[in-house]
Length: 103
Image (cartoon, rainbow, N blue to C red; front, side, top):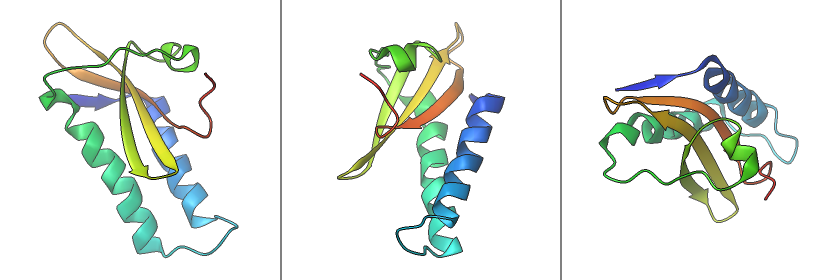
């Protein structure tokens, strides 16, 4: 089962808000909602993975032990940072883009 921390919920809200108010060009509300929904779909499938990659960036390690890199397009990767408990449950702690990840 996949659970979301308050921080992860805030991250999703902030991603949606950022897309809705993006200054480069206007995006439709439907596009923005679908974009965030696709991130949620990836998060919700984390408990079915057979392998969980360890976090390597210090920025990511602050939020969890595991990371999943969701390549959204050729310039944006969303890093979903999470922990796995003894029963295989997932707690998504942080969702951060490659644009904000410091190596």
